[in-house]
Length: 261
Ligand code: F6R
Image (tube, rainbow, N blue to C red; front, side, top):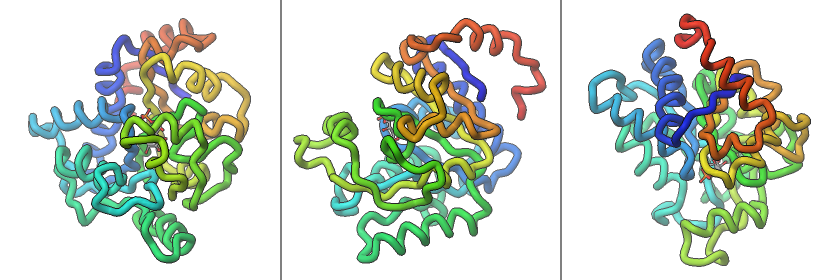
């Protein structure tokens, strides 16, 4: 795992976006795993800057969102279908027909979840997966004790996650109880993963995921099993890392050729 500590959230976005941009530069029809929430906004902002500058294009790229709420209509401003359209598809110029979000409104949710996993597989798998991390250590909506072998499926959101996400809704009661999320197994199948976190609220989860034992109790710790996982955090989110100095030293001495991998 490569751990990079940057001064500010904007720097986090710049470093993570460089990784996504290098994947798309090598393969314009790359398959990108898309996260929602506040953490990846810094990545999308920097990618938009690059798109506007004519440096990269997502016109041929494909996208698969990590997750979707179950129980809110498509037109709800906080449905992840809407969030992905607003934060990613429109600003970055993806072809909407090439971006999918799990269907949390399907009559048969189980079949829809299986079909989503199959669609990722048919697209050739995810080349680079963008991730945030929940304050309880979840990635996607894989809440604590999710199986490392799990595939896209329905989950019940943890009370902590509903509280954390209540800021997007008028009240806690209106936060959906269920979701459809890529599984930890689905996420681990991606060729590369890039997790970003900023702010002190994430410090404990980041430390547990990176330096704690590999355990389904901290779903983010599954990334310790991934061959190409990059974690980019700001100083606040790095506050609980025991080996922070080592990660700074490693990044400061990163061989130039490795930046293009
Ligand atoms: C989003 C997702 C979640 C979030 C996590 C952090 O698609 O799957 O894992 O990344 O809840 O959310 P923020 O970034 O809003 O703190």
